Image (cartoon, rainbow, N blue to C red; front, side):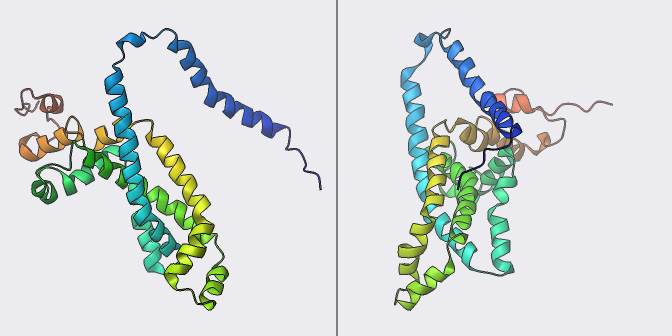
Length: 247
């Protein structure tokens, strides 16, 4: 049976997207020749790369340990409770980056109970970067794992059970190997995405230079919590007196 070629319009539409995705890289190659590479700090560059690789590896391992079993449970356990749990787990996907950072600061910020207990070690640190990445990326793995396990025929698990396999053995020997291609694709995509750097996530979520400073400023000085607060001077360490209201 021969495959029919796609409609004439479809390759042109696909080509437009391919051109758009490749054009920025072509433009970057042109600019690379104009860059003064001697001004690049190689030490800081390699340090940032090491932080990206190590934090991505740790957070991915933590997400996989809990996310794969959770995705399996959501795919196999019916009922409204499981549906509600799946909805709650995906809530971080609906949060803007800064909102996610504020939520994390409520939990692990320097003035939160956990932050006081750890003396602020969970912010502006490697642990803070891992926590931020885990909070943001975990729902993606849960969704991917749930879809991968849902595609596995439950009859195969029933056959393994009739052969004397326990639930854990069935999961490890049957369900996980069959669903692993979908899960592994997410892990690979996750690591590649994190190699771009953790600056955006960690800076916007747990760095005291931005989200933490703004949050702590408003917590420590409630007088600045109004719309007239001088946010720039608060973050920059300038005059923190509230502005006089204009009449």
